[in-house]
Length: 114
Length: 115
Image 1 (cartoon, one colour):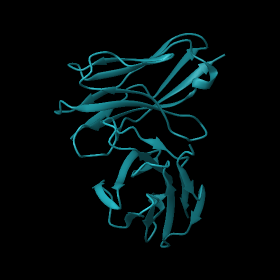
Image 2 (spheres, chains in turn yellow, purple):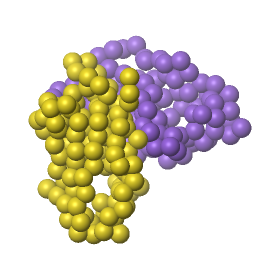
Image 3 (tube, one colour):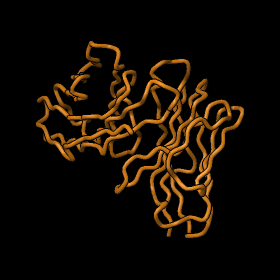
Image 4 (cartoon, chains in turn yellow, cyan):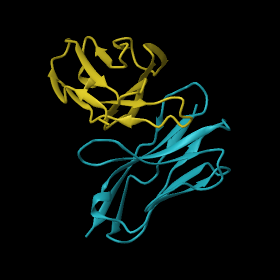
């Protein structure tokens, strides 16, 4: 079974621009979560989607948004980019109704904002 | 709010020896899950081991085992017979058993394997 894929792997953007990152979960997984990883703040939860519905959202400004499609693929969007948005963005998928909800991660998208 | 603390920013161990990574957490929940994830320099986060809070038996996966002390809110990872491929950042993570699906992460421990 193919793992979680994320595109693009690397991205360089300028302050004020917007960016869209994509995540394809493992086949059969309907839950997709997004995390931001930075050296200063560590790993922080952005949001989680299941069956096209956002179930949870972390403490991030409204510039960060996401969506999930009927095939479980997910995108996240960051508008009006700031230097502090430079980070590794990780996507994870999990299957339900597994009670432990183990999450399987993609390789991440490295976003650099200049 | 739940928190996860990894007090060892960096650990080193000689190849073939045993090392223990510490993790403590704070929660008022009784139903939750704990995980150890490994992130090698390639950046792919990999699940190492998981523990359900309602299980008293410590989880084991080959050379990896945990010491889960629920009352003390401690969840340490023991790596036996350390190998060069074990070198990575190790993250402890917590998830509640309710409908909140996010993982709460520790700051991570960098594990160095000395040949």
